[in-house]
Image 1 (spheres, rainbow, N blue to C red):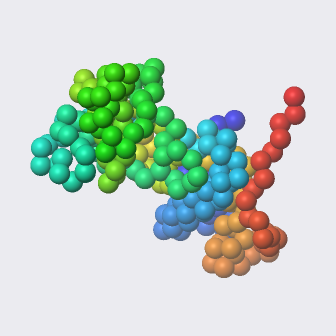
Image 2: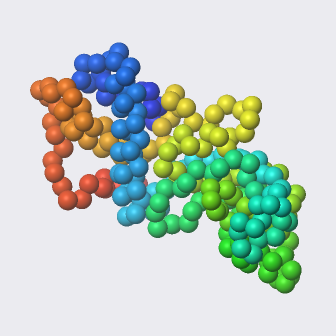
Image 3: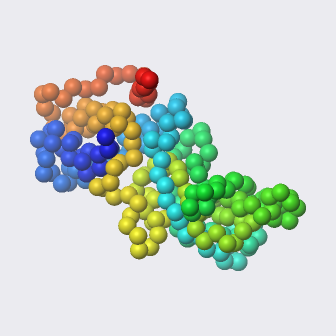
Length: 229
């Protein structure tokens, strides 16, 4: 079963309080769904990092050779380096690697992460890695060194704002994410978000019988469901 889009989610919520055509309410609900998703998803992934695959987004971004004036901003950086044309959205803060995949645009090869101060070492002194592309993420940009032939880079990760990937999707292409595409959240977490909004924000705005508040609990993280063979 495909996950609903953000438009469908806020449509369900507004319909539950008798406001199916209230567009300003639905716009406000989109913001509320967004920050609830970040909060609950971060808690869930801290406890179960293996569930990241349910929230991942992927895109391919263009790379360009860095201008000489930009090299001074990063210690140890030489100008034989590429930088993403767009600012890469910040990944969700969690005890995990920044991204789940950074590599070739056809997803065939993953590149290793390295600190910029090791740039010259990898390029000049290590015979095993001098021809292997390395990457690092700083100031919102992805940098590649050891090979200037990579015109694009593929990135997969979990991002706080699912719509923040759109500037990196490439000019002339449809956006990676919009309000009518499946919203990147697991079904059980989405159910919890809907219940929480109905019991808090919408209950305060539109008091109605039949909307039951979620019982208070010290642990608000939805527990993963075990699948039986």
